[in-house]
Image: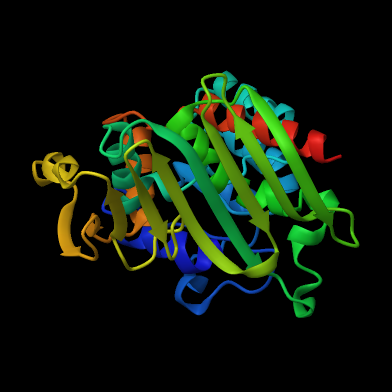
Length: 326
């Protein structure tokens, strides 16, 4: 779904990319791209005009397709998570390194202006030293979708692996890897995968973060960054972008907002209370920004902004949280 609704349209729009071949094993290729149907993944990889491939398959299928693409000399933009576990992701990295191709994880969240602005403001000390983070990404996969691969352990299913990159990935983007994983609680589906996982992360300097990942709760995407003199709250498609660039900031001293006026990535649009303001970082399409960045990296005009070691390091952390849950 993410390929059809988000990434393929971004590939069509991005000036740095051109869609030349597609394939699907999960159903017919949509009419708008049917003239590009190569018939198989192997045919896409072998297509003479293909320089790079985008891999949106279930998690367990990534390793074989990425390996085949690398051996054919194709750069790879692989949907998150890279693999069901960190060791498999390292195998993917090795084969791409051996064949001199770029392996990039398609995590679009860091390319959304609102997400980046919220974390940048927190890092700049606008709300004082950040001491705690709350992260929540939940949605419901109903019984009518019992065949969804996210319920299947053999496909690398489970809530933590599917949306943990958003919650845990954002927390560690701001604080770095935690020193401890605590209070892990998991509710299992009948298939054995986690339908909900919650965990607390802590750092030796006293900072903490709580994360919630779920397939069985009402839809919610939100995160809150709590500092010693304020807080930043991002709600409504907080990780996937959406049509808004707005978020809230609350500060103990209105003078803390003086630095915001000098920034070119955010503006104050409304005062909500005597200490709370609505800011706007400007809406953008994070998928399009991600595709443009990948195109620039493939062409050699810029570095891919998130090293593959960071992606694998996050998978390592998700592996540890899953082990605590087990």
